[in-house]
Structures are given as C-alpha cells and as structure tokens.
Image 1 (cartoon, rainbow, N blue to C red):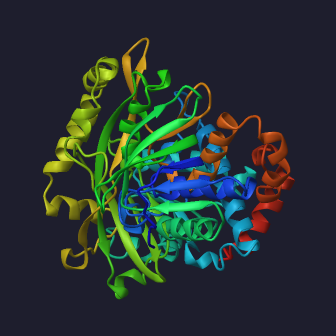
Image 2 (cartoon, one colour):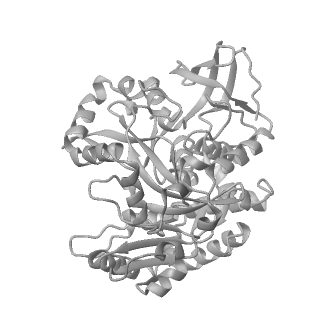
Image 3 (cartoon, rainbow, N blue to C red):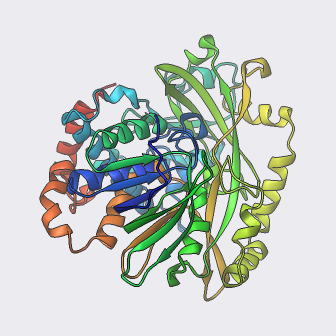
Length: 498
C-alpha cells in the first residue's frame, strides 16, 4: 500500500488514528452507513496492520468463549457463572455477521483470505480441574450460543481430538477436554488489509501512512485540529476533523491524554509484552488441528492463559504456544521505552501507585516470566506437547498490550483486563483502550462507538445496520430461533463448515 502525502491543510468528517483492525472496522462501517462522508486514516508505520493486528503478533483466536476458561469463573457455591462467556460470544456473533455481509456483498472475495474453521477446545488435568470443566460443560451445553459442545475424559477420544497433545503422555493423570467445531482462526492482519483496500476504493477516503499524529486540540466550534508529522519529509501538517477515533493500540492512551477531555483524567496504562513458541515443522503441524486452551497459573493475568493454537496464515498452517508474559515500558512493539514514564501524570499517579500496591502477585508473575530460561518455557510447552523438542520451536515476540488503569473510590485505582471505549461528553472523540478479546469483538466495540458518538444519525442508519447485522439490537441468547438462523447463515457465507 502507498500513501499520497501532502503538506497542505486538509479536513475530514472522520479521522481514524491507527492502521489496525479497529480503525479499519469503524471506517468500513461508517463508509457503508454514510458513503458521502470523508474519512482520513493516519498510521505512523509504512503499512497497516503492523502492530497488534499483525498475524504473528496475536494468537488469531476468534474469541467467542468456546474454550477460554477465564470467561467462566466458578462461584463460591461451585456453580459456573457463564454471563461473561455469553457476552463475549454475542459480541463475536456481530463480527461474524458483518464479515458475512462483506462476503455476500462482494467486498471481500473469499473468507478464506482471513478466516478458517478450527475446533476450539478446553483441556485440563487433575481431579479438581476436571470436575470444574465438567460443571462448565453442563452450564454451557444447552445454551443456543454453545450448541454442539462435547465433553470427554476418555483418552481415546482425546487422542482423536488432539493427537499431538496426547502423544507420549504418561498414563494415570486424570484428563478432561471439551471440543466444539464452531471455533475459528482469524488473520486480523489480512482482514485489516481487506477492509482498508475496500475503503481505498471509495470516494472521500485518504490513507496517510508514515504519518504520526503528535497533538490534537478541540477548537471553539467543537471540531478537532490535529498536528500530524509526515515522517518521510518531516513536515508537520494541520488536519481538521468533525470526529476523531483514536484506535492506535497501546499508542491510544497518550493521544487520549492530549485531548484534554475530562474523561481522560485519571486513566493510566500498564504495558504487558508477550512471547510465543512457534512451530512450522509440517510433520508436527499436521498432527494438531485445534485451538486448545488450559487454565492460567495462579497470579497470572487473564491474557496469559496457556494455549496451543493452529494458525492459518497466507494459506500455510503453523502452531503457536504461549503466551509467555513479559514487561516493557513500550506501549507499542515499535514504540519508545519512554512511553510508560511519559504517560504518568498527576491525575493518574495515585491510581497507578494503588495498582502497583494491590497487584504484587502479578508483579511477581511478570518477574518470573521475564527471568525464565528456554528450558522452563519448553517445560511449559510439554504440558501440552509431551514430546516437544527445542529444535522444532522458535521464540517470537507478540504485539504489545496496554491494560487500563482507572481511579477507584475504594481502592484508589484498579487494573482492568479487557477493552474499554472512552468518549468525550459531546461525542466528537473516542478512544479504544485495553486488550483481549479486542479484535474478535471489533464490530461490537465499533457499534458502541457509533451509538455513543452518532446518536442523531442512528435513526436513519438502523435499516442498513440490520441489513449488515441481522441481530443488531436483538441479543441472540434470548432468541434461539434467530440464533440458529444467524449461525447457519454466517457458517455458510463464511465457509465455516468443518
């Protein structure tokens, strides 16, 4: 992709900051809803999808709570709380519907360019964990969003579902797993390129790569004025916008702070880096076809749940295992070590100190992860692949994640896991902060942005929204017939029959 740079002043109806899947999704939605609006996308790198959206910078899981155990905690009485799992699945169904519309409309020629059916599994060992998994299965199996889930403790069945995981495993340990065919592997980098390619073919869209937004201020009229540096010529240009979306991944927090809106006060960020072990040996890759999630270690953050993933990138299969957590003061993989220090201000210092005080187990966990040896990483892999050999696996660095820190009346500050949309009171600016489930629920998140920031436009957009997303405004969990219809349609359109 190329960028047509200019040094002249320009103005847009919408400016998207960041070249990832979030900005691309919002841009595509708005262009389909309001084709006459002008949209500018500004990315600091020389191509889109080079940070967290890049295929190898994330595990590519279509997060729908089919296998992720952190979405189904056990209550004190032993029952399983499935409310968060239902919410995450509902959000992913919105993504599936929008993607299906893009395929049906010819905007995306083939869903296989970014999406593949991969069974999702949960895998545990030990009496206590196996009992938990059985209770989780019983709580989910009859829910319309989780239809088709299976459970087994039979080693022969487990070997059929995940032969690589069962090869060489010592007998005697109680094992359990769930399996469901409805899972997906998503190449969010490829999806981002497809969406940006669509936008680039529409009138009124400008893609400005190697352009870094350095500042943004609201003028007396309520519009925004952005100072943008052309990294090729080093010239600074002034850009106007009626609405600004800050979707720059970890780089969103510093830009949100520069807006000066009251909603940005007291918000901080805690960066967490990650690494994966990757295998591309065809003999090993061919013996595993699933995304297999386990249970997180005590003190580990939710995004550090260990999992062994089949990845399909550019038509080639590979395996990822991890993540191994780490720490860097960078907010972006290609960021600066000064990102964290520069984000600390008087209005968020108290919250950040409170989080540091109250999250010592997380701190210890991160220190242990940073200091672990290659042999320690390999031993963790062998919990999932008993016969794993170091020569078949290489260590790669994933995208940088920044968890949200917010003020709290009781604790002083809390560390939040997940994603959060921060909008100004007048709806002219929105920023996306946080991490997982992130990209999988991009459509749901962007619909939230639209509802918060364009309430006056929604009435005339509703018919188009329902055309693109049939369950818009109608939760599938409460409508089994609609749920079945939507699932059948998206499975067919997205070629997800397994």
